[in-house]
Length: 258
Image (tube, rainbow, N blue to C red; front, side, top):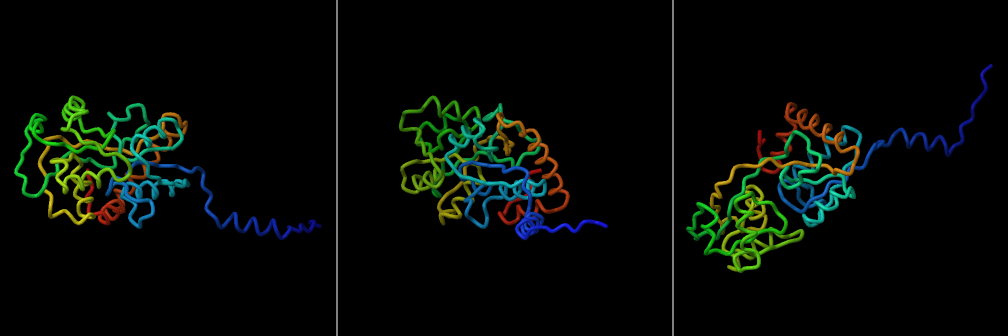
């Protein structure tokens, strides 16, 4: 005759809760400074399309994603050291020792924003000689513009903002006529200006730069980074083929970059 096994109540309750709760294999901490529509406020119902994509992909793989916002330099340092798992929105040139997936999360293009009635045009970095240029500290603006910026650091020609609200600060400086031009990705700048209610007060000037792939890249110190990159690649391709990627992007007024 089989023995009657009596399970203590507390153990039974534990088993019920354990079976009904998700089991997270890893907690993946993704970080960046605010760069809407790629990544926005963590407290928002629209935290950014890259954040939504990452959460959906890693949740399906059994992992939990925590998204935090901090200044860009700090974000890079924290992923570099392994304190955080990955960074949102970096380029291969900017973080060349990080672990990158094959699939980018966008293909932004640098542009310039000026006040609405400014008829200035850009043909080369020398076009900026008579302008005060607003930039964000530690950002990568491409070889030509980076060279101009470094050559003019410490002069009135370059005005630097930093921190979580650096782009908003640059737009405020532009409206207050404390800078003449600000450099930013077209989609990010347009999205920010719209949220600030000043989109009708600014204009874009073609910077003549090609689009650049940006990625969610993972820490070189984390032994699981290659696995995370592979999971992301597989997950993004599935989102694209299923149509879910297009639906996420539509919430932010964006289209697939491929």
